Image (cartoon, rainbow, N blue to C red; front, side, top):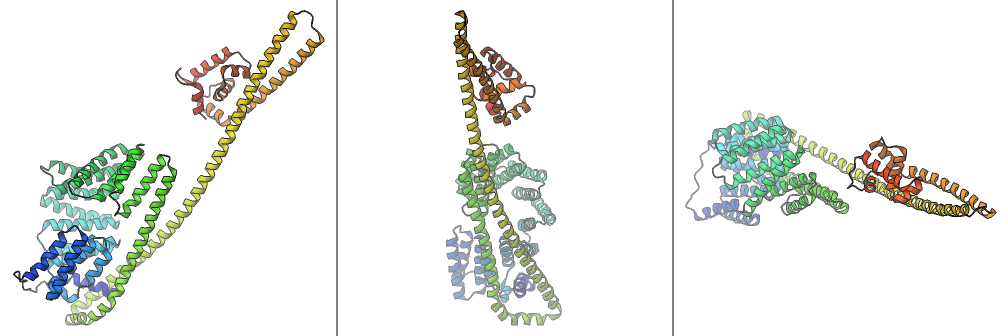
Length: 597
């Protein structure tokens, strides 16, 4: 592995080793050579990856037929750049490794810049940010030799971004300031807008939201001051608006988040309608908009925006993870538990696919190292001759470079295996916690249903019992009427006395039933009584009992019978309850008491 890293770094520093070598200009009049470079140019500008690959293959085949090493180098660099654009970093690195060390004598400055940019981008895609930073530093050093201030700005800005991705925020801030100074010197409004957005994003990553919003708003002000913004500037405006909305969303300022995210997605939709497609940003900010709408209980609108987001995120697994998590939240808000669980299951499947993909990528990189061992052995003699010719100077360089490469490799391997172990443990723990949560929710649901059924039965029994008491009381009233008839008839007979005794026994039985009924009211409505006392502590026990009877949907006549008072007294007590509870006449008292249960 140390030989592999040495080879890469050897190629990287070749522009300095051969900077004094004067190369003969390629014959511009050669029609075959012109055809090769035209094909390479077409592949760079082509948006269709398959067509771009065909252009490169045709150009490389022609270059090999001519035996033109310079054209072959251009073709391989173009091929590596295409793989990097297609998110196939392992193939991009493999293509760079196919370059022979001696071919670096033919490198021009632009070739070295392109190779360093490809290597930095590829290692960044693999998550090896420290190695990506190293190659981007070489890129910055090389580009400083040119007079192109814009290229210097973008190189420093990319380096700052890589530092931010590796959580080295102090270094990121340093290079962002350096890029900002270059942007100020250039005086280009588009670049200044771009720089303010990236600095804002750096602060947002560090949770410095006020600083982030300050730079985002500067970018918006610059855009609004432009006389005729171009499509790229409008696209950047939409991204800045989306970032502002994301900031507000993180801070739970949901209304402001919705306003900014709607402006962002509206602009992106217009740009896409005119052919400036940026589906990933569009889908990303639609998800953030849906999250803000969920927080504002606008679930249906959130569901519509998520459906639109999905159509723009099919090629972005990481964004799909966020999509399915948000979709689960929407379904949960809408009470669609099965759909919410299914969304979480889809999210888990994508996570597993990403993990498997990372494993495959790492396996590819490992295979690349093995494939290059034989080729590196063949190159040893050439490298030995070079080292021998400059032994005193280059021996120290070889030792330092080898040691640095070994340390970087060890650091990457340790970080990778540590990360994989942590992810495995986290995944197992999440699965266990998920299963436990599901079991608890299932048990709670069963207990809740059982308790609800028991309470319904008890309430029904109580109502039936109250109705029975009412009927007994009516029967008692009939007996009283009969007694009145006996007393009006004069002297009473033994039969009349016997009937009177039966009436008294029956009356005692009714009193006993009333007592049982009142006790059952207190027991069955224990939770209701507790909440009633907590909210209205001034209610008397009689009024509390009246509330329990009203909650059972008993009529005024039935309540009068149960409490052994007149219906008029019941109406008076209802009026007093309304007054103590501050309820107007439009509110149904029984329904209001139901809401306290």
